Image 1: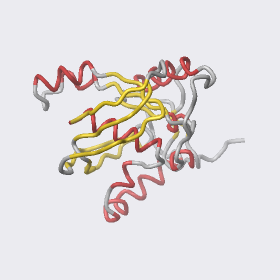
Image 2: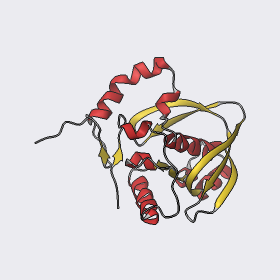
Image 3: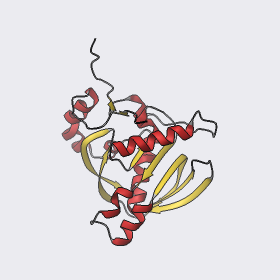
Length: 196
């Protein structure tokens, strides 16, 4: 089932999310709905708070990058095959020199900005079967994971840009929160006027 994605301005997007246990109600169904919702919005990652749920769960599927010619053949292959569910994730370590990449977010449509992040991240997480993993990711995959991890920490990519850039996009952000945008996927706007 395709669910509405919560837009910028919703309080749930600024909350540090809570861990869940294996008996979380219909977790399998939720994960399936998250993938369906993400694909319908042409996303490569989606976190539970973007669906209004303040829990430590996010998904990543970088396969849309598999034919992106700005990456090497080897990177395209790796991106084309990466799909993962992250439950109760924790960053253990981040390494390397910060590098910029132009990021966007399904909760903040039509806004893209360069965000600086470390190129390598070591994560501890549970998969959908609640099996524990400790893995190191790098490059674009690391970046997508860091972006989605920020969501479960209550951080948006716009929190990572300069105050000058924030001022430049202030009106656009207000329009998103009020629902004054045309968007091709289902969204829920926090400040949209109710029509009676």
